[in-house]
Image (tube, one colour):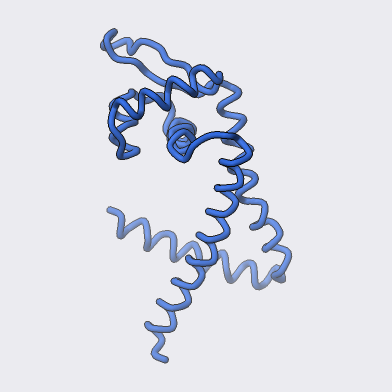
Length: 147
């Protein structure tokens, strides 16, 4: 097998294993929280992006404003997000996570990452250093392709 083909195959295989495990843990988190995929995605967007408007959120999630509003209403009712007036445009509403919403998503992220901590134990410190170096190069190259 040629080095570029072996490289591509190895990256693809790792991505499949990683995504399978990550999505399985994410699905378990969603089931345990009682939230839909859209609701968890909305909370994650607020967790990583701070305050955001309803229409921005709908666009980001690829759903209609009506669907976004419906998901938001449930999350407000559950005390996971707060809705407030936008100081620049009082007709617009801004959304932020409550402490409870922030803690819920932080727990979900921690749960999804626990298997990586266990995976770390499978490697010697030298192997870990090699993997860190390789993944740093891979991450940098991947970010450049996003630009």
